[in-house]
Image (cartoon, rainbow, N blue to C red; front, side, top):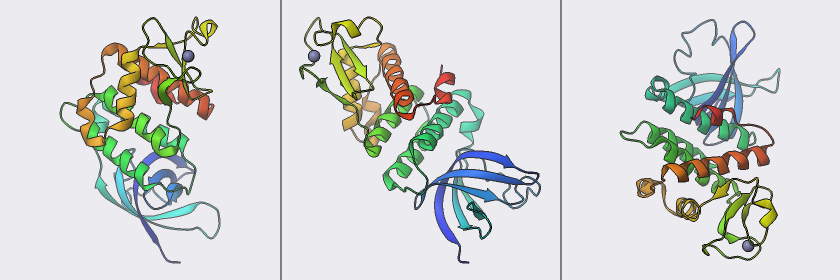
Length: 249
Ligand SMILES: [Zn+2]
């Protein structure tokens, strides 16, 4: 059976039986796939230091004749991103990226743009002077765009207005957009409100290119509001909690 080749990022690794591991990867050519790495637990030689979270690999795999799980035949380590395992904050952010891709994508649904965004985001984390939470917000906003879940932040969904003094805004995950205090006064009391500055920053993040990330300056308050929004949006659309958010601090 001929082997297939792909570039891949390791999203998840689990032990399987006494000697095998199951790795879930996000690949360039095949999207998210789970592969069985035979003997990876027992004989360290073949996959030594390769099947680690976040690693960028060139993989060779074959469909299994006996089960639906495909077999990982070989993996070449292209970038292990060691710094992501040495620093707690970077580790949590990288875990969040991988967990988001794990939950937001379906198997065998490839998306080159998302693969390149994930690799870019991991590279961004290991750069000198990275602002971790800004990278997290930016990655998430771009991921939503690529997946077709771009939040509508152009104005209140009902009156289309944004920025009138005295109006308060909240994000409705159900309606995928903003609602103002004039249109829904009763909904504001128990909601996480968004300042106009946060809304405008998120809109800029939607529109600027990856290379211009440093042009975004999220204040502490805007960072908190943006992260609360994205976390609630994940919970609502995925119908599950994304664990790494809880460790981001
Ligand atoms: Zn309104």
